Image (tube, rainbow, N blue to C red; front, side):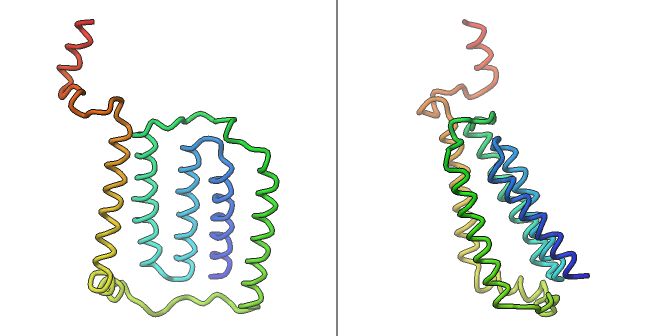
Length: 181
């Protein structure tokens, strides 16, 4: 049963990943990314790695994708399909991706053969939490500062003018300016 659940979640992740790459609207691609990352969490859940599945959902689906969506909204990225982004090299890229998938897939089959997927039995949430917040606390904090800097950068880039002080501070000032015109 574990193999079946893992296979279904893996196929869903692959299908959603293809839709992320082939979607013509950037917001739709971000939403398909949510599905792909959720399916990867399903793969972890099928392997009885519940902690990793929950972290996958909380960190990637809950934080990273939301950050991407906010960055799209703050930078006023175009949401309509852009025909100039479509190139004539797409069929070549699809062939290269297919050959790479065959090479990687055959490497996995040659390495593991007919071995069954076995559930993970070691590693409790307490052990992992202790490891993260004792040995990995500095990289964890560096990553949070990096994400904060990316969000601040998106806000700065989304400003219409180069100076923040030129913008009205309150809605009342903004309404007053519109009334004067």
